[in-house]
Amino acid sequence: GFKSSCLPTLWYLLLERAFMLATLVRELLALGFCYCVGG
Image: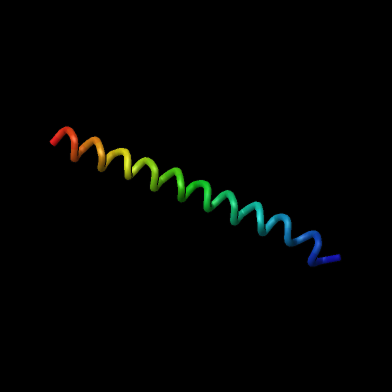
């Protein structure tokens, strides 16, 4: 009932947030790397 219909949405939001966070971290790491190498 309620639980089975609510859970997938929760998982989707969690995965989406984790993906966004991973992308952000990767961008920051790339920027830091370029800064260290260039500077």
